[in-house]
Amino acid sequence: MKILVPIKRVVDYNVKVRPMSDQSNVDLNNVKMSVNPFCEIAIEEAVRLKESGSAAEVIAITVGKQDSQEQLRTALALGADRAILVESEDLVEPLVIAKALAKVCSDENPDLIIMGKQAIDGDNNQTGQMLAALMGYSQATNASEVKLSSDSADVTREIDGGLQTIKITLPAIVTTDLRLNEPRYASLPNIMKAKKKELNVISLNDMGFDTSSRTELLSVELPAERDAGVIVESVDDLIDKLKNEAKVIS
Amino acid sequence: MKILVIAEHDNTSLKGSTNSTIAAAKEIGSDITLLVAGQSCSEVANEGSNLDGVSEVMLVEDSIYENFLAEDLAKLVQSVADNFQYILAPATTFGKNFLPRVSALLDVQQISEITEVVSSDTFKRPIYAGSCIATVKSLEDKKVISVRSTAFDGVSAGSNNAPINNISPSESSNISSFVSEELAQSDRPELTAAEIVISGGRGMQSGDNFHLLDSIADKLGAAVGASRAAVDAGFVPNDYQVGQTGKIVAPDLYIAVGISGAIQHLAGMKDSKVIVAINKDEDAPIFQVADYGLVTDLFDALPELDSKL
Image 1 (tube, chains in turn red, yellow):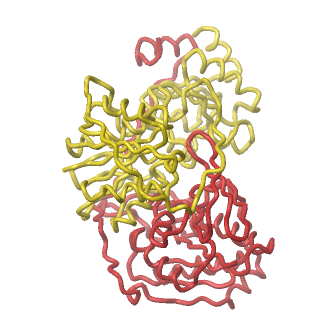
Image 2 (spheres, each protein chain N blue to C red; image 1 turned 90 degrees about the horizontal axis):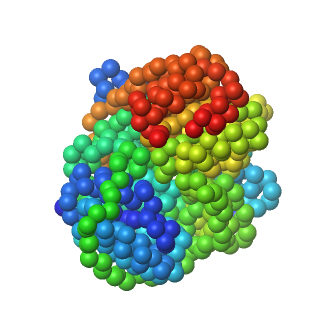
Image 3 (cartoon, one colour; image 1 turned 30 degrees about the vertical axis):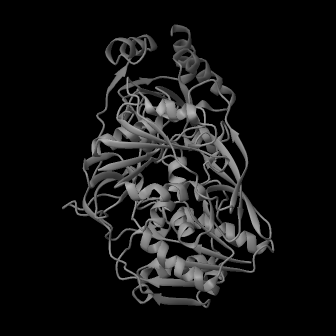
């Protein structure tokens, strides 16, 4: 079984992101970049399936600028066998990423695609579902458990109000939620080994479809600040304020 | 401009997220069709036809839609999409699951989780976990949009009686099937729909202590939530979690008990109308967003609050 793991280079989750002074975009100068946390979970799940003997090969892939090779090397250090960079000059929208991934899927014919449910930059939560649609594959989003068999998988999904389990026929796409697993750290020997693993670069422009933006970013601003309120002295005081001032309880 | 809203429901009644999505649709245009797809769900269609702003309800009842599997739902929406310039769904786990699939089938770049309609083609949406708000213009002829339901006050039922038209199901793709569902059983309102939410954090110290919140929640008709710290510590199950990676809530009253106020948590509740914080650490960041703060030991405050409500 072959597993494809699409990942994304994003601002590290510890960075507090701010708009640029002209509000044209977010300010990403000199900030730390990492593998999107949900993608790390996807890599971990794929590597565990390989370690348990369920999968033969794990391929990490990303669509991005040349510097995304750094995140692909991280994926290789975590246990992926080889990597593919679909290189683009600009950052592209989810639909374009999904189309590029679909092209590679048609060549590689993976049995299973595991990827993050969303990237923590745009928070779009689109690419996995879009790729599934383009390929005509089944999908299981927000996975918290994956039980794989030879031609299908039972996936437990986190939904509003609880958990849902569905059976999906392979080939299929699983998107990861936070509690699927706890990703490992790359060991130094594995980081060294990863440098020698195969990393192919293909050009997005050579794929032969329109990659232009279908949306325009007009501005980026900080959210409205909430003013700090008052400190009340006692529970009685609090109940009084909630009843008579805020009028939210009766 | 014809707008299609895909209804979220449980085959028995509409979810509040549907009302909020219709409210967002009303800010875009006035010709709104509600699509109700499910199994034995004609009651839901009746409910939808009474909602303010709905001009037509399309109803499709078939077992393939009973559990709202993304593959079949997306095919259905695609089959009716020609007639509409806008396709909207709530940005809940229901809508997030199938809407991007619709979007790709229609070759449209979706706009996710809008919080404001600026004009018919321009929308505001949070990015970077709500650290920034982006204003985005869609250049697409057909717009596919998911709506953060807490950002729009839902439409209510009135004297409206929109016609209900039955439509045919699409052929099932038969590549996925429902196995089981485990929904949290509670007499209390669901977190995302509750008018009052009381949440506990690490300061609660144990899962047993959450009964202090339960009792107050019952008196107020509130839902009980938790911070990620409380969930990670194993005090309460995952589905209690309010925050960036949990549920986004915006009730009339949010009471944060023993919660320090990590950015992660604030992202999930800072749009609440009134916020109360109870914490013994007066420097806790939660007090910076609270309308009313009470600096005291929660183990003193909760029983007193309980007895005086």
